[in-house]
Length: 164
Image 1 (cartoon, rainbow, N blue to C red):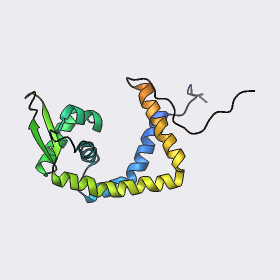
Image 2 (cartoon, rainbow, N blue to C red):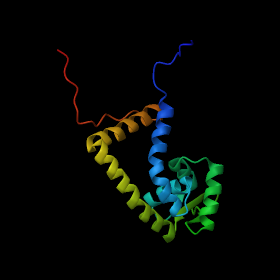
Image 3 (cartoon, rainbow, N blue to C red):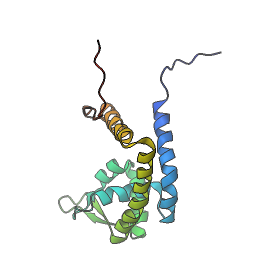
Image 4 (cartoon, rainbow, N blue to C red):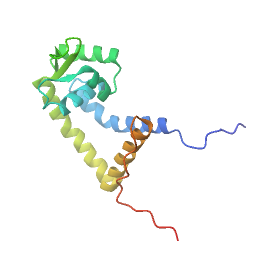
């Protein structure tokens, strides 16, 4: 019998499994609005930047929606065809493209945000507000630790007991 050299659990797999568990509740709503997961991620980003009348550069959309450039191009083409977004050349640099959600796209963001927020409310009820906040803080720390910047200080209200 082979002993595994691994001591820790498979964190990437657990994170993917957690994502899929959450998305199982979200996907039916997305599909009822005719959206794929990727289209929803783009609309969510554009909804969060809806106040920016100039639109959002496609590179930023790709980064915030976690889509590779070639995939984003196809997603944006379908979304423009379906009237969910508008694409324009960047006024400051014609080599770049900016996108903006249309009224239809923003209406879908508004409609979906209600069911998604209701699910997050349910999760908060099951886990407790503090545990959910701790989860967000831990995920932010892991992202910062493995990413470009320093890890933010923990925001947990719990304190460690002092050693004797």
